[in-house]
Length: 330
Ligand code: NCD
Image 1: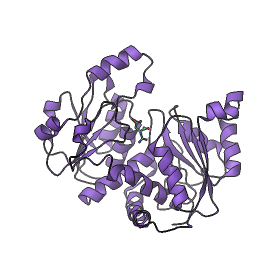
Image 2: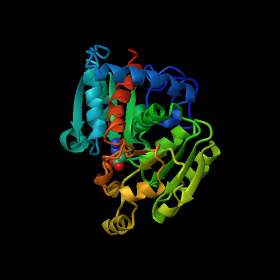
Image 3: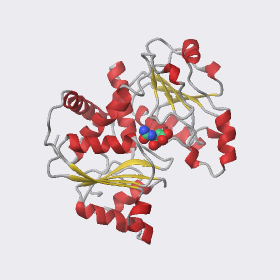
Image 4: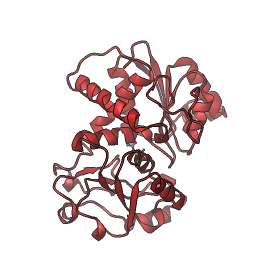
């Protein structure tokens, strides 16, 4: 679905204050005003969900969830979001095994079949750019990117921005530490796009040498006004960070298990000692999860650890808000 005049470089429609019917493929479609519009809607959805208020906002809508890659949180929070709002879902995990994709049906045909039955398609796929391809294939319904390879994961970033906003009351003048697989982590790629929309944000990138941000992305984000500082050691983590955002080494993106294991062995993990040494008392510790070698469970009781608390819950409220807006009911 692509019908709006003003487009991003990739020919995607900008949100421009109107979510109705729009594909959500990249954070590049958002302007500050769109994020500012979304935040109170998420807040409203949170109130509704926390109070178990029944809703019929998506009544009559059927949304297809097509997940070509494994998922716990994204899949179940989309499913829960739709059902919480009175809508229904067609849920297919591993379409490459259980659908006609296994018989050789093309990706485009699969998308067009599911669009015939539903009001929107939520897609996760291992290939970067698959969400854009799906958005082009679907003529009548919006496509939401739930993660395309190592490219982007826009709905994760919207929930991450909400989590930051809820904590600090602003999305500018923030300093963050982004750690782990900076090269492959789609959550980080979208988050950097999101943070670069707001003024005076700084990110410190801590990753194994082989997994640094690509030089092209580094230049691109810096050009957009995000201050980026690469560091090589935990010892360089500045005390003033408002948040740490840890990511696992993305095993599925490696062609050699040996290389993966070598890198994992040298990777950085958050421990109570690391927090004591380098974290401020008012910061928050985030992780999109799953945590695999990222955070020692001994940290879980620390009040600053939000990954299994507000961050994971905000995924539900954010996806409720987004779907309600896209399907024109909020
Ligand atoms: C992330 C993903 O799938 O990109 N998980 C998620 O959606 N919450 C992060 C990851 O898998 O490492």
